[in-house]
Image (cartoon, rainbow, N blue to C red; front, side, top):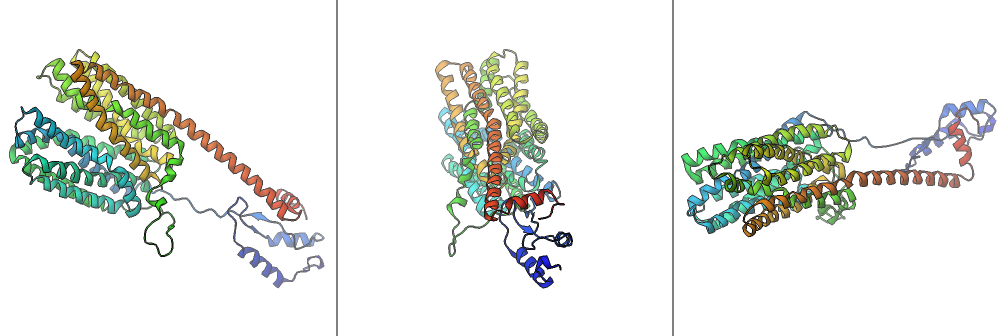
Length: 512
């Protein structure tokens, strides 16, 4: 060492270890370490004070989680596909069970009995979505696997209990509440777990998973009709319980991969903080708030054709019209739409996926208004084909949009609250259309009005990409301003040497 350094080799090693041991701040200039070769070069060139050395920024970012995009994820995808098929296949086939319940507990000509029996199916479908916010909390606390398996077990108990009831009253509890609540707890984790295994292919995978319900919806009515004719209502429900037992086994495949958030429990407290039980951070996103209120607004008219189309066909084309073909058209093209638009969503960047939902709402709204104008049965078939195709588009990209708006760690409650709010228009919309039919004598006005909410709701959703782009731009500006403030603070704290250090970093040949 030269005289100008006033530092022995031992002192140099001690200084280097001391600098390396200092904790790094979480700023763009997180830590500074000395380059020994530069020190020696400076000393050979005539020297500089060894207490001022080149400082090079060193980043210490944690590696980002990489999704496997396959592997065991394909097994999880098949399990989630079975979940969607079993849950919504049974729910959508309630029309077949509805006729069997009328024959079992009364007469098909009893109008009051039809009203009471219809509430069994309505209560069951509504409970699946109504329980979703609660399910999301359990999913965050217990994990996808425990929640899904436990839900499937509750659904199995409810369906088995329904096969032993001898009157309609207990059916409200066993089928409408217990079975539906179990289905809700089994269904939502099947959407959340996909984000642990897929990111680039998430749209395609969601399309395949949601297509499971279309496949079951098309095939299960034929199976149920045959079973009801051969073994009766009670034994048919017991056979359906096998689907729920398989669903329990499918839930065991939901192995989580994403890292868990840091546990912020207070010492000595066994209860998680309220911020973890109820994730209020998702509501800080303006884009999410628009999405979670815009979709329910669109759904006030969305389900009206699915509920009242069959009765409208009977009134216009007669009871002998082959109205079951319309349901098959909707079911088949819905499955095709989920596969097609799920793949398309993977090529649409970020929250721009919302435009796919906008297009689906616009088309379904226009098709609803077209139903009263169709005086030829072939025209109704064309309308149903388009409605089913874009219905598949709307359903398959709900989860990918949620991942884009709130991130992978917050998606559980984001989806849960959305589904919970969807339960209101699902229950309210069709009865309003039925009320208009009773007052006006036809469904024409009901279908015209049903097309307005999807169009208005779709227009509201167009604001989301603009809101998210503005948010990202503000965050980038704030990050830039924060970096400049940190550089100025570094200059002040360095006692006037900050400019020299900055110049040294910019010019590696300079000597301080």
